[in-house]
Every structure is written in C-alpha cells, then in structure tokens.
Length: 79
Image (cartoon, rainbow, N blue to C red):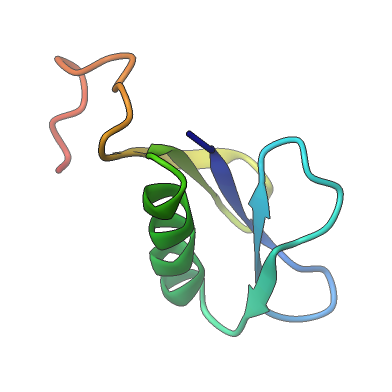
C-alpha cells in the first residue's frame, strides 16, 4: 500500500511523489495527467490515498484507491 501526492512543480508541470519520498516519481504537464498516474501507481502497489494539492500547495482533494481503506467513507460523497 502506498500513498501519493500530486504537487505543482516550481519549474513547470506537476509532480507525482510517493509519500515520504524526496524526489518526484514523474513530472508531467497537467494536473489531470499527474492525478491519473498517481492513482495508477497507488493501485499497482496495493492501493492507498492520492492527495491532490492546488497551486498554493494546500491539499484540495484526497481520493482512496482500491483496495485501500478510506478513513472517512461517510464524508466522501464527491465520487
């Protein structure tokens, strides 16, 4: 199980970084593409959380990837 973060790259594009990692796993042009890849990476490692950060660096959304456990299933009614 692995959690991933999608963050804005200061130079250009968006980073996908495994939680606790120092370097980005990959940098892509769009946030949408980064989110898709983060969910794919998390799913391949047994599921977990994907946290999507806005351009200001604050977490704006968090998605559980199967077969991970959603810590707040009743509150997650966006998806």
